[in-house]
Every structure is written in structure tokens, then in C-alpha cells.
Length: 181
Ligand code: HQG
Image (cartoon, rainbow, N blue to C red; front, side, top):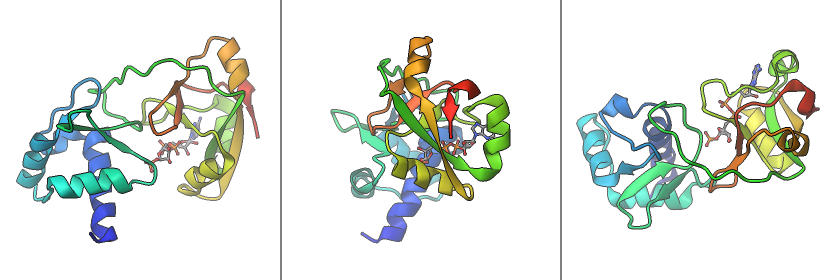
């Protein structure tokens, strides 16, 4: 299967499963699941040809493991990254490692120093366990900078942390006092 089609389909699935299911008249449940047959039907009505083989291939080849199929294989969801308010995944709270990393762009630093890290359009601030991943995340918006987050101190202060099934750490916000660059 060609990689351009896989990338385009992955972007389309991210769009409808994380951000705007209503754009194709799709309904997600509160855990983010969409029925795969319903997804294929809704996409077809909006000019996007999907089939099971293509969807399974996108799930299997996503290097960030962005999507998951349900145990019975009937449903698909994005495992993190949502902005749509129709989804509120019930992540289990988890004790974070002592430090976590956030990749951002140089041009956001001044604002981050004033406000701390905010989730922006998404539901959570996204944090990584390793510097390389954080660097790649920051690179998407400009000259990358990796911020070190004192997750242990935040945890002690009662901030909640969650980990999506692809390893991405999530928290509602990071106060500027818990960030060291
Ligand atoms: C920045 C991708 C100004 C924040 C990645 C980031 C990730 C602030 C941007 C996932 C700020 C939001 C999420 C403040 C935070 N002032 N800017 N106070 N607080 N920011 O895309 O973390 O490929 O919503 O640093 O790999 O970049 O989509 O979040 O630069 O895992 O699967 O505001 O998306 O994964 O940008 O990326 P985003 P993110 P996928």
C-alpha cells in the first residue's frame, strides 16, 4: 500500500477521531470510539474512500501508534490528542517519572514562561519520557526547544498525570514554576 495514501488517511483519521467527527456526521462515544463500518460509510458520503484493509494498515503502521482498534475489532479511536468536547477518555491516573519533557518552539517560550504550559486547543498538555521525541514534537512549530518538567514535584502537589496507550503523558497544565529549560 503506498505511503502517501497511508499518511493522508492517517491525517484524515486524526481529524475526524480527534477534532471534528461532526464534519462527516460521525458520532464518537465518550471514550472516543467510532464504529468502523459507520466511519467507512460517513467518509464515503464525504468523498473519502476508506476500507477495512486501509484502516487496519494505518493503525498498524502509525509510528506514533495514534489509533487503536477495540478488542472485538469493530471500533477505532485515537488514543490521545483530542480537542473535541464529545470525547472524555477515562484515563487511569498514573504516577509519572521524576521528569518529563515537552517539545515546543522557541517563539512560544516568552508566553510559556509567563503562563506555564497550557493545552491550547487540545484537552491536555502532551509530555514525553524522552528528549528525542520532545524535540520532534517541538520541531513542528519552529526552532525546537525541549523543556524539562518537574513531574515529581507536580505529582507531590496533587497534579494528575495520565498515560495514553501509546506512551504519551498527559496533564491538564504545567505551572511555570515546574518548568526548567
Ligand atoms: C504550545 C503530535 C504559548 C505548546 C505531537 C505547543 C504530540 C504554548 C503548542 C501532540 C503555551 C500546542 C501534541 C503557552 C503550550 N503559550 N504556547 N502558555 N503552552 N504552548 O500541537 O504538544 O503527530 O496542540 O508548547 O507529537 O505540540 O498529532 O501540542 O507547541 O504528541 O499524533 O502550544 O501532537 O502528535 O500545540 O503536540 P499542540 P503539542 P500527532
